[in-house]
Image (cartoon, rainbow, N blue to C red; front, top):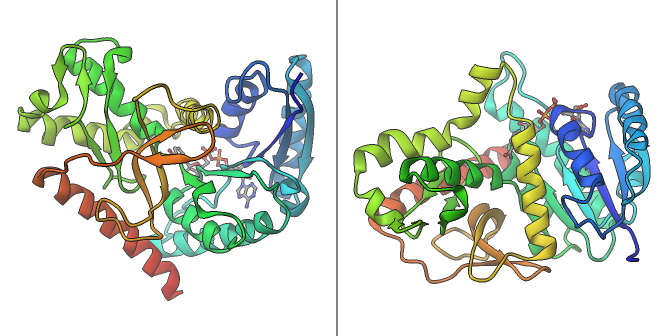
Amino acid sequence: TKPPVTVTVTGAAGTIGYAALFRVAAGAMLGRDQPVHLRLLELPAALGAAEGIAMELDDCALPQLASVEIFDDPRAAFDGVQQALLIGAKPRTKGMERADLLSANASVFSAQGKVLGEVAADDVRITVVGNPANTNAAIAARNAPDIPRERFSALTRLDHNRAIAQLAGRAEVPVTAISGITIWGNHSATQYPDIFHARAGELTGAALAADRDWLVDDFIPTVAQRGSAIIAARGASSAASAANGTIDHVRDWALGTAGDSWTSAAIVSPGVYGVPEGLVCSFPVRSDGTDWQIVEGLEINEFSRARIDASVAELQAEIAAVDAL
Ligand code: NAI
């Protein structure tokens, strides 16, 4: 049998953490033949809840679960970590400005980045889910200069999966008939779900996009504002679907994407597709089971260019706001 992989989950007692941990422990993320050491990092106030989750994990008697440990100290929780899922973040509270949210999280993610740089395993992979996810990942990466920048990512897989579901509904095909979708930019309302290179069964995304009213007034806002729609309907933010996106993201990164197909992930820009170097931006990506590779050579039409640029401008403004503080 394989040696266990050490997985640290921050915000483990939160709603996404609760939805993710049992599937991670059951092998949905790294494979049913891959044992895991699970580390749960929480704030001191949530340690009791984390203890309860650890008891439930025990009670599943999962064959792949080699151990569960609970921490409130990031240094101990990240010591030797190979897969870091950074889900915990400071939530936006009433009356808080966006700049306050950015700066509160900048201090959390700069501290976590620094510690990861000091104690993580040599092969660590880092996935940031906590919002503002792209900028949090950029800040963590900056504070861990000894970790190669391509090891940092932020989650846009939930957005990608939302786009697949919406396109499948429009084209009246199963989700398995959809390919070639890309989420570009920020995990925010400015994100751009691009279907111009997509296929939906017998149809092309470009042909579907010819109905500009549907594309502009229905598809793009439905995908980009899905998070708010879920909050309005459920009274709580996306949790099971966010956990599912996180698991899909790490699984594809660690085990590889199939054939020519691609997915979306926010990674540190090497300066391609007009995205300035260093921003953590969502791109079309494939994985060989080790690193994400950006899908090159996609033609970007004027319609797409304007939307990608708008989301990239927002990413630049977020970093500038953090730098100004
Ligand atoms: P939640 O509020 O239910 O749970 C967050 C947990 O994180 C809490 O238990 C809290 O104690 C913990 N926490 C906060 N700061 C921490 C720190 N510094 N270290 C360790 N633990 C810490 O929130 P939920 O619903 O689980 O969401 C978590 C984050 O994920 C939020 O920032 C949310 O905006 C974001 N999110 C991101 C999505 C994406 O697609 N990128 C989708 C949905 C949510």
